[in-house]
Length: 258
Image (cartoon, rainbow, N blue to C red):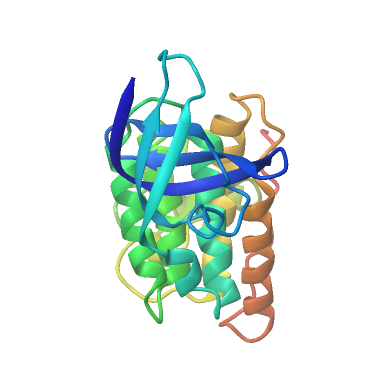
């Protein structure tokens, strides 16, 4: 069996002294792994960096084998962000989350397109952190756990939406949710409509998506939680908020069921 198409590198783990096992995301074949000969070396190593877009080719004698993976660099997203550790952390986190969450060898073209859009936005001077949160919202939807943020689950109104139910993923208005605020997740304004997002809002968004990724995706896969790279991104956003990024983040809610 053999295929060839553009792919985004998600992770590359050393295998032996010089090789690596890489996981890539393609539009037509989904998330796919293969052995990269020399993947830990000076020639192939820089190509198989998280977020890089490559022209990938996979070969194996049988369909169920690991196979070998080769690639030529199309766009080095990782190198473009080396001077900005915060945006680089978002790139690495997205690659790690996609690798952990997406099923292997199952096409998810929307996930591929979403990754392409996110990497483009990470090149922008502003708005990249909010774009990352929106990417996680879209990934949840792609995996069958879409959040309903358009109208209040209690009253049906589209106005004054302020919270999200941690159980159903549906929005709740300020008025309807006020008595239960300690049990609800904050819904940041940038997920309700256009507008800039300060780091405190981004943290609320990461708590929102993280709750559903942990509870509905990673738990179902038997993982202990989100990849460490995502936690490092959260730490960086916390630092940005603490350094004057526009207000204090909301207190983490008590989301235990009543």
